[in-house]
Image 1: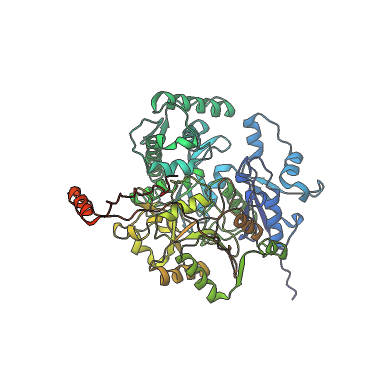
Image 2: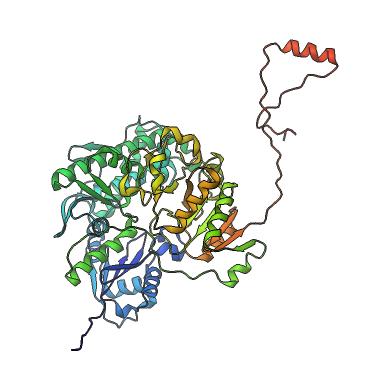
Length: 601
């Protein structure tokens, strides 16, 4: 008997939105690759860009062409979005924009549009491993909603409650970030600044028993564009009237807004707790999954997990808009294959398409650097020694992470034992000096440094968590001013990074490394080895590790014009010292003020 194997079913997932474009490819329901458009175009957030480069990279990884794709799943209901925005949907124009030169305009393509919040919900629920869960989605906006509560079960995903665009938590938080001086994209900075302030100011967000209320929001009947502009205007008017220093800030003066940041962060956390409590009541489930840009708020995530409202909280590695390509693909795959709706846990984030290794031309740019080739064992030992000696290391290994967190494939690493490392790394990355840095540590050592259990949230560095008071002095560069950190648990299957942490402990007596994203301010995380080399050449990285190559910057002579004066005991009878000096013929010494140049410069 002859057996005919049915052809593989490929689903191409796409985020075609105004920012964070991305693509993902599934084969018979299995994730093969995913990548954000910004990593390839090198434009942060890929604002207004077609996701065509991300699509092409996923197709190359799967070794297929566009014609082999069964269905293209888009994480927006584009015709509905055009209607809401007052524009006309043109299928041909949309496909040409989204696919670029990949589409000749002739081939027949099957398109499936998935509502934005459904795609977000699917990206969280279908990667959680939970058979049932409550779902909360909160972001800037979807087609017509900004917050959703849903139920995930073997029957699929059912939206049970929504809030309109006029009640956008994501937009409100972004507008406050913009007011402070971070721009609308500075939500993460506002969260970091909040730890420096006190929550003593009134902000236009109130948690209620049924969710939350934004004071002075726009009417829901207004067109979407008007809602956005009117709500933004009213928020700024509120801040101008109610929040000192009563004027929009700039990046040079952000500490004046620390209390506002703390107040906004507290209001957001209370609102998320209220939404989670409502989701528990509406669904009856004891597990929660979250998605949307607001789910990137690590402080809120940590507080939610510690609240005990749910047995477990899950956030996928890409909860922002880039994740809707994955969610849309998972929804459509289950529809087209008629597969059972089951959720399997996403155990790692290393899903970027395979990238070529360093080529000879790139190596020529490093001809003045010291380059060593290592085997598996000697590599981690050599890098651990460099880290323990104080070097800042760019770490490039294998397939890149998806999402906004460095997780050990495209990371900048350093020793956490000296607080000066915070200023060094922030300066190297051209970031604000007060920004916190995050620690990575092996799974078996988590309890030595942190209280409690953040569950799966720490796999992708998505929750702020209290550091044990007894060990804070051992890793001061990893501790934020409120005594918390945003840890990453590194498991054994992340083999080389796990080995590096263990090797570092043999030299430094702590299995913890500072792990921050391999990029400089305003640029996406590096993807290719060429990106890594370019960052090395245009920053102050000491060491670059490319697979098994260790590349060291030539040592430059150190010129120091400043010194810290020796600390001498204070004499309460200086006249006696002066008398003794006169008797011995020595001139009394004058103390050197710490931090002041000896030459007075």
